[in-house]
Amino acid sequence: MKASDPPDRARRGLLARLFGSRAERAAARALRARGYRILARNLRTPRGEVDLLAEEGGLLVLVEVKSTQREGAAPPLDRVGPRERERLESAGRWLCAQPAFRGRGFRLDLVAVTLDRGVPIVTIRPDAL
Image (tube, rainbow, N blue to C red; front, side, top):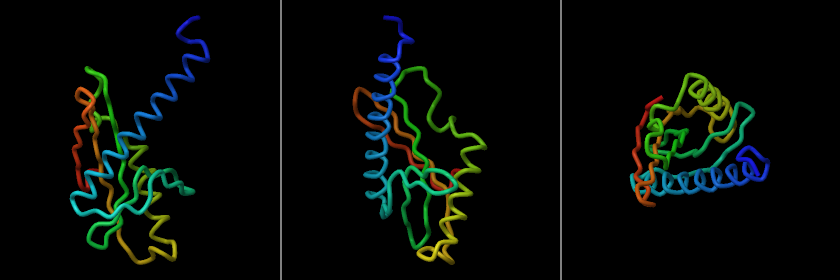
């Protein structure tokens, strides 16, 4: 079997989803410890998915979680481009137009999760985007 065969790709995809889910759980724990209230995970809106939707001090916080476990990979905080920022801003505007959140403001936070010998190291950047 070649590395590009479908079973290998499917396995890599499954491992990436499991790792991403672990990183999001670590990010949610760290945010809660800082006083954020987690409202939703993997929230799908017509404007795109939001990794974590939280609230801090009455403000909605859309959180983008970036993670890595490979040495030499680009740092998670360097992997957010303008398209992701636009997607999150659009999702935030859409959410704030909904009856449950009407009239509220929002900000975009970035959380980087790096596994160091299996231990998640979480870096939170409020209003980073």
